[in-house]
Structures are given as structure tokens and as C-alpha cells.
Amino acid sequence: MLMTLAKIFGAAAIVLFALTLMNFALKWTYRNYPNYFKKHPKYAKVHLALMKPFVKMHKWVGIGTVAAMDAHIVLAFLSEDEFNISGIATAVLLLSQMFIGMYGAWAKPKGKTWLIIHRIVAFCAIAALMVHGILTD
Image (cartoon, rainbow, N blue to C red; front, side, top):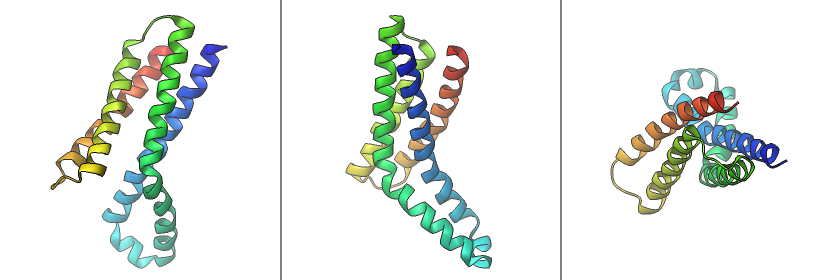
């Protein structure tokens, strides 16, 4: 029962993490394909309408990702009484991701170094999450 709940929270963390990544994906496509959007204003309008809620909710969905991950860790530990090294690595990356994002949101540092690190950690977290999924199932 606990492991089933752990898997549900793990899946929720994956879905929420994917939603946080949509913030980057939508902004990236809009920045890197301006000519396409100029030629197709209807698509630009739809793209911007889709992008707005993702940008607005990014911070809160990221926090939800970490909360779902925390529940996943607790339930998985209670059901198996051991930690998984790939899960620990993924958790460290996702927590780092959250703290870097919080730093950028609240400290508002000059420059984009924190944002570059935030993005690099996100791609590392994707890889760690994939490895964790493969090794634990």
C-alpha cells in the first residue's frame, strides 16, 4: 500500500517537474523562432496565451514538485526501509533546483549566472530522474 502511494507521488513529481520545464520550452521557442511567429500571428497569439500561465505558475509548480518528491521519499522509505542512491541524487538535484530558483526570485541578483546554473541543474535532474526510473522499476 505504501509503495503504491510512493509511486503515485513519484509520478506526480514527474508530471509537476515536466510542467515546470514547459516554462523554459515555451520561452525558448518564442525567443528562437521570432520569424515564424511574425509570419503566423495566430500561432503567436496561441503560444503567448499558453505561455502566460506556465510562466505565472512556474514558482509554485516547482515547489509542488519538491513537495510531491518529499512525500515519495518518505513513503518509499517507510515501505522498503532503505534509501536508493539514484533517488537521493535526484532529490539533491531537485532541491538544488528549487533553492537556486528561490535565490533568483527573491535576491534578484544582477547577471544571468544563477539562471544558467538553474537550467543546467534542471537538465542534470532530468537525466538523474531517468536513471532513477530505470534502476528502481
